[in-house]
Image (cartoon, protein in one colour):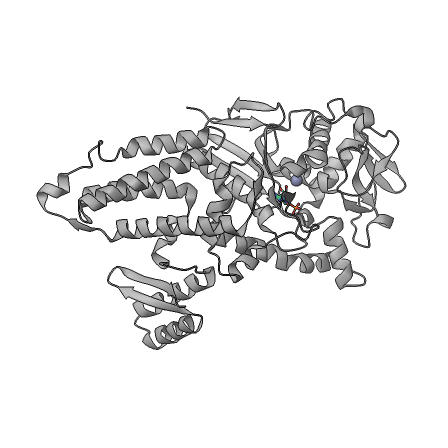
Length: 482
Ligand code: AMP
Ligand code: ZN
């Protein structure tokens, strides 16, 4: 079965055909690094992680890019608040802690690293080349010191978002990076020096700084050099950001920009989009400090289909925590199973009637191929977990090595998408933060190296933080103390 995705460009479900056999190129709009991302942002990054992991499960080779927007109205404003006369280095120092936090949070949430993370400040030359090309081809013009894109020159303008082109305000322009859907005007390609709050680059056409939309168009061309398979982002980016990316790229290069546009719906709080500006947001750190488990946050954010709006509540997170603990317990039980190695049991295989593991794998992947139907995939996973628990009950937690290996192989397959089971060993009850897991790893490492003084010091530190270590021959676990 091939993959099917809902393509925003054609507003329908379409069979996915990659440009090159077995290879997929993806570009995902990443964070604007002027603050710590909230879990609404992470819903959209977890969606692109699910997309990537699903394609990898189906044996595609994936080349995936996520940009870091370090030049825009908000990052420049932030740098100007810190320093009276900021230079480019000041802008980089301002964004660095947010970039570091982004990578840390990705790691804690089990999001796979992608192949490229280009930054706007490192892609100036490709952006200038694109602007020059647009000017040579007559799509760009200069007005009041800035360079703008003339949307009336691009005949397909509005195809992606389906905006009403009758409301276009000809002769009017926008200098800001973001604006409203019912206010369509020419957008800025390069913002002139007078409007840029001090940070600027000299170019043949204009001194100033790139517009946000130009950044993504130029990065895609710079890395891939041709049409790409998939472009993702949150639905809020369809207009104007993605509409403008298409206009610039197709006007300049005269070929199709992207084959499949896939957009993720918003995470809501009380029915409203979770957003920094609305003040209704949680960061990952907020939730970890309250004692929530990062895997439960990952599980909750990935469990709702990407095209559905999703209202976030702490109650839903508590429920996800219980589910994740159930998963940990099951996986611990499976990895703890005793195996017999006598000749008879060595050759014993799992009977298809007991657990049809190949079918579970196929059903799991087929669900993902069906426009990333995660609910269906999770139902397959939970079914398999029930069946495996039943086998363990029947066999009193003793399996042949063959049976154990087959089951472990099945659940490791599921975990290539979920990326949760591998953490089971570290946690029993209660919620454990990444910091605690890290301390436990270090303490175990010290014990392994017979550095008992250091192991004791780390054990005391873990106790001070309210956790008990339970050591057993199979490994050690943390338990929260009340
Ligand atoms: P920003 O840093 O605001 O440019 O957003 C980075 C990414 O997060 C974009 O793909 C947005 O569409 C996405 N995003 C922002 N807010 C939400 C939300 N509440 N739910 C889901 N995605 C979001
Ligand atoms: Zn973008």
